[in-house]
Image (cartoon, each protein chain N blue to C red):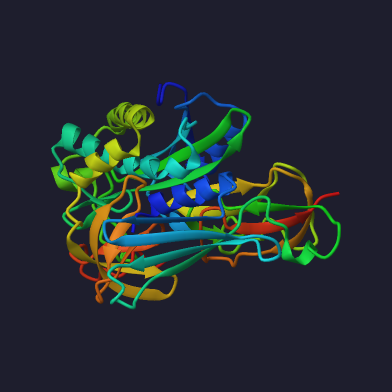
Length: 255
Length: 157
């Protein structure tokens, strides 16, 4: 059960490496690592991700996917779907998924995910790291994509423990669905929780920037895009920023 | 084009002794041919139809696990090639400012992490199933890699 086994820390460098350490030791499926504060929180490409002490949900879950690595695109998508549904069901917040699994509210980022996979004694593991802004109300200006939180959206503080419980339950439900029914079922759920399909987006891959139209996602989770010359390709990596998200809209932040 | 489909096609060719397969469906023709011996690579031709449109994508996916390393082809040294299990971005180090997992000349044990392939915001640590001395690194840091693309060649003791 997700979150049933749990280790909580006042301060950690980051919950993901601690969870990976547990995975290597054979921690049970669904084991969670939470922290009040991360001294070295990070996102994709090691971007600094700062969260004030005790305000947000910082959690990493140890999982052992039964599906092969080439199907893990669905794993990436389901994390976003789970966060989206927690916000909707518990707080009536309408989130908008940004490929593959960031969650935006009105163009502002409320949650991010970083998944790290490897092999342990129990087989292939994937640590699903989630950072969800709960009670943070002031955000650094360094973020290019503006941020928001549950407290800012609802006008009142939320109970972090209740958010953790809801997150664990919802993530488990999505994970089981993916395991049993495959990535196509998750992709269908993902499509109904985003507004970015059919709209222009900026794609950043390394130093290059390009405007494309996001058309669809495949069952493998790849994002089908069309460039200005009408050529289509499927993306499996890189930053994709919906043009409607954020005023500056050319990256997540400048770390 | 459906990359998943293409991936399955490449896998199919790799797992069988078929040298060439050509499929035409819904106005798209895909031909996969296997070049045997020295070059040991797969060529995938993808051509939109009708052929009046000259523009087409040409994807070359290098051969898989059993491919002899070009550097080692001349002698009897036994080699093992680590290939990419997924489509994604190749990283030689766990973080931009960290040291690479492996260097040419380094001897590694079976099960050692040799790189990370990022796909769909998942950072996957890739291990070598065999131990040996790293004699070639075939992919560039930060560059996209294809399914089954050779990444490292090891000389097996």
